[in-house]
Length: 512
Figure 1 (cartoon, rainbow, N blue to C red):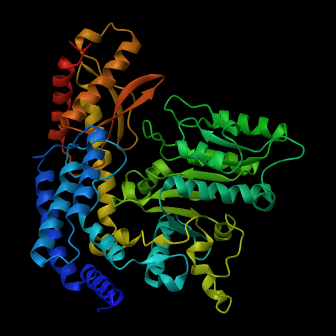
Figure 2: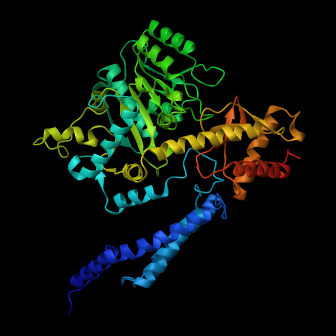
């Protein structure tokens, strides 16, 4: 009688070997390259829909049904090479057919770029070989790549080698949280060990720009500071933090004995891309001896442009800052840099030991262990895409990407101003522009009706697949908003956008 245990084990091993077969990796990798090449040709020529819109329930039901079908049809034997290739092709085709097409020049939506396609191949190398970080010996080259890029970006800020430090995290929300955790621990002294509860005295606060990203308030809640203790400073006429109001706010807080964990400035704030006057803010933080953190997730890349780096003058004076490579450095998400001017502060966020990870026999390696500086223990090698693209094309490409997309915003702003049925709501500082379409039927309408029309108009356009743009409330009234973050967008594309909005406006209730 055969031993079923041995038989089952051998069958399982056979299926596992098929999943790990290098020949299959090679064959399907070549197929993937072909599928992606064809996809990008179609998308970049705007022959498909920008957003492949479907009702959420429809997509969820379809995704679940395909898993169910695969489970029911799966044979216990490994697939033949041609059947494996056919299944793989179908799966990839489905992914490409049902997602968002950021590489279409008509994508003018959220602050997520049409990433440099070749950068994705370097990320794929890290994914296929599962390069991870936490300790140097688990990801020696990933660590070297990350720290080399930290050095490059810090160098553009004018920081001196050997004095600053930084890490890559999975997004600016996590990077903001980590930086503010370090600020809290430095400012409050023993908060890591004792918590933020205070027996006597007022609660500590964070001071922010009014349009600061929601991750700042979220960080305050996570850090035990409380969202009610986020103090928002008034703005100037360009929706930037007003230095005079900041000065008054800091003076008042200190006069009442309220500990200030940090001032959080924006470069730039999300709604209209406003850059806070960082030099002025830094002066006041030095005057009041307060930690300055800058959320430069989107705008930090302006430092690479000789034409636009004035927007971030003073960024180098921040105690900590966040700079997303997966925004204006145009690499695949997620790749967010967290930089500290004083490298010693990079160890203040997490004051703890993990002896099962960190080798006491090689204490000199600790400074290369990212796990001492980040929330993540296992962390993907997130910097391969940027490192590879930098090596292929050099830094000039990143300068070009900033300059071209910022110029597109200026072109669009000029087109809005030249049109009597569009209203430009600000002069753009970067590649973000907010505006409203006001056809003749709405010229005398009340603001609420105008705002409702913008929302309906956006929904009509994005569900059609013709363009993808976003919306934002300004002074309580919804407005349309574009981020020119596809460098393949042209002036003709922007003319087409205005024509598309007019056409859909005539069909939307209230726009006739």
